[in-house]
Image (cartoon, rainbow, N blue to C red; front, side, top):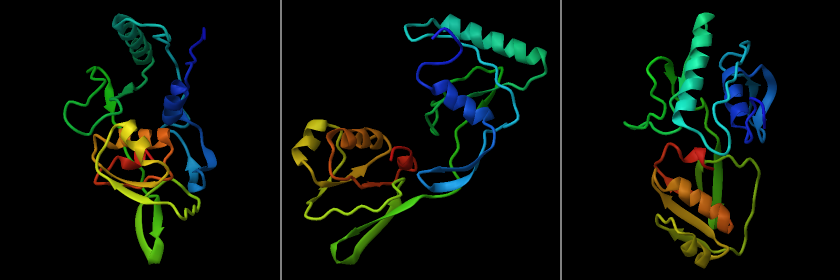
Length: 198
């Protein structure tokens, strides 16, 4: 695509986070209905395309960032950039250039919960982004420890697979559960990042 647009939508996503105008009645499948906006909804966005789908040199990326910063500072524009999508532990900084303000990811100011009810009124509440009601009957319940192999999960078959997860394993487990199409997969975890994957 011979323009500043990207081919997978990531530029649109990051730009809207930065400067999306006000959008009324925004929600995630009826969750969290509100007026959405970017960090600076009245700002203008200037895009610099540094790389293409095929390949890139680090020097091209640095030259693009340097040019963007030079143009911005000449016009008195404040410059900030993302530190990446990892963390919050030490050594997780992805973008560490010292001449811009670094911005880290945050969380939302609310929780989205779902309730799993088992026969005889036993229920558990947990984080979920599934807003509808679902009912499964005559489906076996299986408890599994931490796993990261699709062959193991395929042997389980179409069952409700309760998974015990760690920070490191949860993303892999969610992806595999979706891939092999288990009936459903409640996850037991102390991870604060579990809701990012569901």
